[in-house]
Length: 261
Image (cartoon, rainbow, N blue to C red; front, side, top):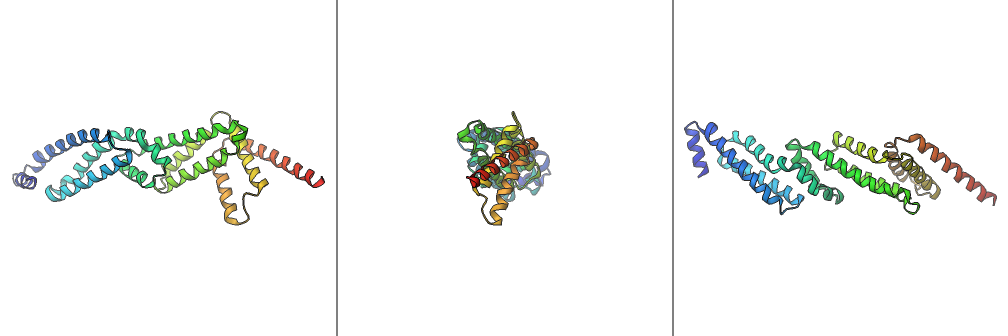
């Protein structure tokens, strides 16, 4: 039936001026209503799959029934109602779960769909906020002596996980790389900048003291990369140097006493 109507409007020269505008308007209305209903019952990952299925379905329908000229306009309308109109809501409701769960496939799908509607800036901001919250929570343990030794390893693990997300789902985007850098700098350098500097210096000293670095080049290179990854974000680099020298001198003195004893 649709194909017959399209053929009739085309023959009359009314496809572009009458049929297509009306068809696009009805499509917008349909997807506006459907998206609101579907969002109520699907998780973010499920909704992204739904969006892909709907877009593919419209591509097939266009190929079977409509003129090729309608494809870009129709897909833009569908994306607008399914994705762009709900971008902030989608990010607020489920991005943290995808990041924490390391859901690479779902994150890649989210990146692609948001890129298609020009909403990557919203994704960058939301991802940066997640990094800052996670980092601040880890760093807050720095004041507790019994927990402080675990702070830097936890921050290095957080950085490694975020770097993996940057490299794969987020396509090693330079804009997202900047967001990662800015986010780490924000929480590391908020408040007393001496705290992360002291914790990093202590972490390096512990590595050397306990010989955790390992004996082969690969382990040494990995340990240095983790340390330098955090060090680059520190504003108080001079404080790190001072703490490190102090710890080094203290360790040297302890070794001398041990030998002397």
